[in-house]
Length: 402
Image (cartoon, rainbow, N blue to C red; front, side, top):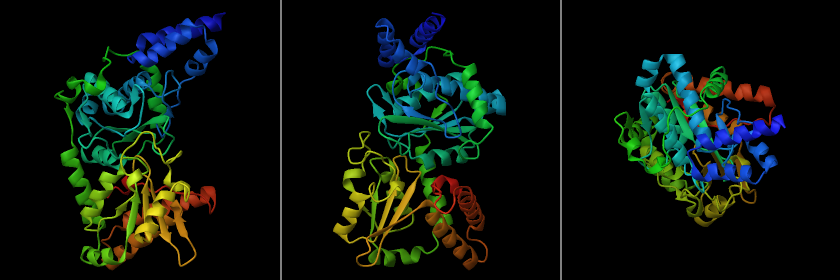
């Protein structure tokens, strides 16, 4: 009986705190109908916050991604940043926030990003809300965190997970995803800040009080050009040859129904590369992911089937693919006649990039990015030692630090 009473009290508290009528109503229905097993399944355990942040199915309850869980997580993050930097410094440094296109009924990445913004603004933080282009790619948010000297960054995305999921990634002031002990520190602070500090409201995505708040800035017009200029200035070694290469090399690109296409187009433009051939059925953001059950380009030929079909149609020899939030890269090359496609794994891509960077580092007399090459080699070696020759290393553009 005590356990049942505790479960009922937990449900009543959830209903009191949840600002979303739909998820709040779902818990209320379970309570009214005496569905204790359902209540226990969604309320007995909380999502565990780790170095990858949070990731789970969208829905009601403490072990799902929803408005209340995002609210509580952001309050905990705010508290942790204040402890780490001091409240005044943390507020002044601020937090960069971006979100992808995922949505499920009343829940969406856009709304979660707005909730995180509302929590931080109410606490006195500056917020850099990267949203002018509709959705942000994860590398842009990480770059914004670094470029604006933020205390942290938040990216709302479930990356390459199924359409039912959403997630919440946290970046530290160095522009990289958090590492221990920050993960456990944030997790502890979340538990200290479960009760909403104030009634933030229920219409976050359309609430002009967030976008018009004096401490809320959309830095897209400033950050995006800097990102691509820094990339091309640092990593574009032979721009004079790109037109020639464009005549000889055809590239197909897929965004896996994610946000990558608009950013990849700008990357090709910044490097003065000939335009690629997009997989049109997969290049617009679509939260239903209609052509892939599991939108992870690293899964290989199954996930890349439409890209291969487009490559056959246009005679392309290279396929590039991003995952939905555009921080994973897959590469495939057409083999010799009758040999099909070679899909490179993460270690192989890392080795190719490392070789290219080192080659140009030497060719330019030690000025071509050797530090990045050393870091990449170290990552590949660590991965190989930990997982054997078949281990994979995901290549993420924001890890480069330019």
